[in-house]
Image (cartoon, rainbow, N blue to C red; front, top):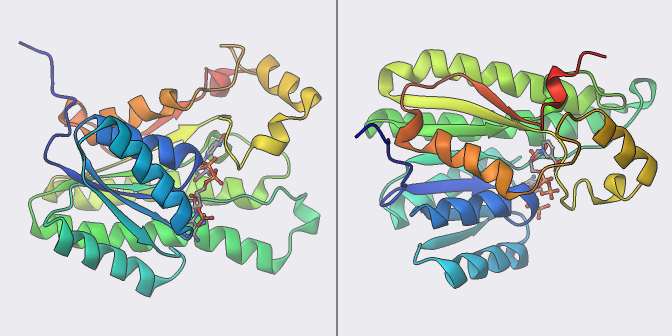
Length: 257
Ligand SMILES: NC(=O)c1ccc[n+]([C@@H]2O[C@H](COP(=O)([O-])OP(=O)(O)OC[C@H]3O[C@@H](n4cnc5c(N)ncnc54)[C@H](OP(=O)(O)O)[C@@H]3O)[C@@H](O)[C@H]2O)c1
């Protein structure tokens, strides 16, 4: 009688960066939990593959919406299309992101602008669209995919880490402002997961050993292990949780030496 509902039946979500990696896993997981899912990235063929995966294991409706989320106009188009075609919007997952690992003294202005626009500004612009709609329609849930790199200092990650730390702070401030509308805003901060973003890095045996040595659970994450926390934060099971960042890091962030 105390088991809360983790079901997302009847809900609609937008997942940015749903074409591969963590975003694809989240989109499929949300669909498995009963949610209809709008899939957003710049590459239609990737989105088609994600939609095909969803169709192969669920009855969820998918909406394929190719868009560059660094463009305010394209973000507005995504929201207009989802709210028109699906008729509702309950969940936004700001997952699209990028990294260019560079020592701080070598970071160019162009790199700074590109990473900040992709990881931070786009998440804010999308949250603003979602916040407006959710305020007018009785609430919703926003989940920002941040990173352990926004919580602890990682070498060559000055731009990426700064955007992810800002995303964690943005999560708190939006939660504070929008709690009164029953809009919950939370963040999930992964450590290393094998995706196209990290593939090259994780194929370096020495680097992989350093990661594993620093991780109490002695391994990198499996994609489904980031999906469960997202479903928790999207569902009624977390109705009294807002403004939080759940680090999904095998304990890495508690490492004190
Ligand atoms: N993998 C990890 O270990 C790890 C750890 C911590 C945090 N994260 C975070 O998790 C998120 C997903 O990472 P990932 O590893 O799955 O990355 P990934 O494999 O590189 O996938 C990134 C996704 O974002 C999309 N994307 C990038 N820029 C975009 C833009 N301007 N407009 C629309 N879509 C865009 C990409 O599609 P297109 O390029 O086709 O547009 C792709 O679908 C990121 O925010 C990342 O920082 C990942």
